[in-house]
Image 1 (tube, rainbow, N blue to C red):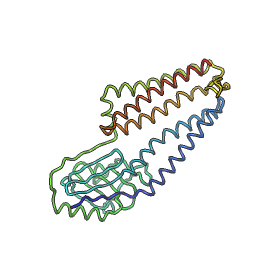
Image 2 (cartoon, rainbow, N blue to C red):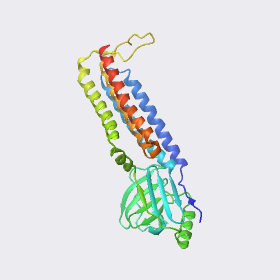
Image 3 (cartoon, rainbow, N blue to C red):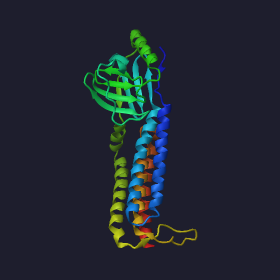
Image 4 (cartoon, rainbow, N blue to C red):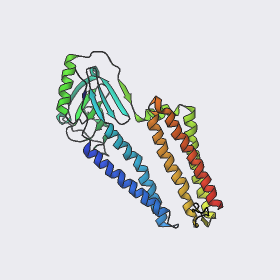
Length: 300
């Protein structure tokens, strides 16, 4: 039997998540622009909270979009695989007890609390099925895949074709025994943390960012104004309110979070790990540059 690919519906989810990401990015940029022009007061605090809050949400929705674009269900003679972002579940065909539509349940499924088209993910408990893990894109035509460990809820575009292919595969029997495999996004973080160089780069960037934030918070009350750079002739720019010094450590922190996430993406593959270390080392170097920038801004 040939390998069968049964991807979920993706179009509606991709459009929804792309619109959300564009909106968050736009709001975050506008918030930082307002920050750069505001005096101390409610407007500055509001812009700060909006800029940081929307920026923090970008990696969350970005990962969900990436997970949906990479999502697939694969069935062959020996195993059934679920790929959802960094989450991978390879199930030997002999471990699958049954596969049936969710509509056949007497007690309906309780869907994850936070869900969007293209992103119905999470773990819930069902009174009859026990632990249920969702890796689906649409609420319509959900399919249950039951194993002794847990039940997986998926949403293939053609659920009937998948169930029929599964029935044929079980009738034919497995050609060779396979070992089940479960991979979670947290595995990548734990694996990377075991390397001393990784810990040094992560903690170095973290402490530099925290140090800059604390230093800025302590020194801002004693400053009247600062200069945030130089013009084309090399002369310092016009003085800005001292509170805007906080923009430097905040920008450094947000860039560090972005770089940390990008490094984790590359770290998953052995041949790309050197690139991950380059990204994390650049993160740390960027923090030093922002620290130097703070020193210049205070002393200009």
